[in-house]
Length: 421
Image 1 (cartoon, rainbow, N blue to C red):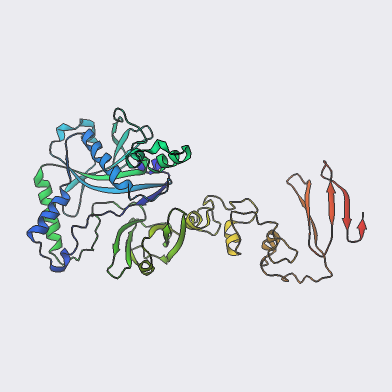
Image 2: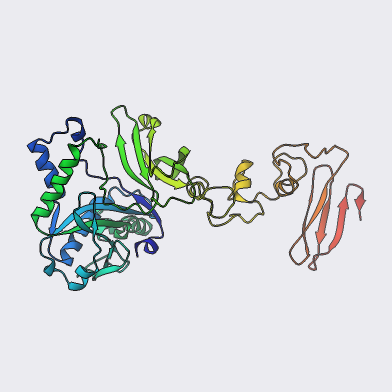
């Protein structure tokens, strides 16, 4: 199934048909607009599973250019409608496994997902995630074919660069969704007429529109509209069944090569509305911006949302304490510490109490003198492992101490401010 197959982060490319732009203004389709609308829908007519694979291969080439440059990202892209004029050209198992849907215009279609496996074979699934066809890879197929397409002299580079380019240009990073329409050209004509009818009604269309037939199964972007004033409007949607939390973060990056992300907006959604739009005003100051979207769900309960752990702090969203130093990731961030570092024995305020000790007793490890320490008081502590063996000691600047441990973890010599004991 698509969901368990793609365990990496999923990013939706917003390369969406814009044929319906401006139609809402005059609400009258010219013959030129009618021709463009029809031709935009009439993308492909296919007559076999192999031809469907060829369409997918073409889209792999086209859309990989829009995939963010990260091997951890898989691009889910809607590829439009495919017309099947004769269902008998396909295997009976393929046709019988398709699951039909009808959009608001009563045009019946059969959504499918297509993706490539590690061995180069192609899997086609219906909208429920059941396999409807599996196609063997072509003869002389090589998993480096996309990398070679963009870098013909690929194997003249150093080995580490070759490996990186092959991974970055992996055809497995593209997963396409298509709508199969079984019928004749009249099927497309009726679809065209239904859209024309909608555009001449009182319904205003956005400048970039996602097909109404696309099922929203998770929180996702549905449109990105660059405005004439340089701002960018982003539209999102979520399942009608709701989400585990209504809080979301919009993440923004201007440079994916150094993987630097910032939070553009944090907001609470009205889940009953199903949609939300945000205008990114700072976009006017940059040539290019990339976006990601996460809910504020906190899987490990450390006080940091999964999205912020992944995009901002580089910590493990599945571990309460990524570094294992005894301080939760959220606590480390709250006090301005690196959550991926070992902060337990650090003493940022130099008050003689470690960060771990201060968080346990409820004092601020970044603010000194909360413990009413004076120059006449020294602090000496000893640390033990889970088997109650002494492992180390700590003393602040007011108590000079040095200890020597033998192989049985016992103190053999201790030198303090008062002399040797």
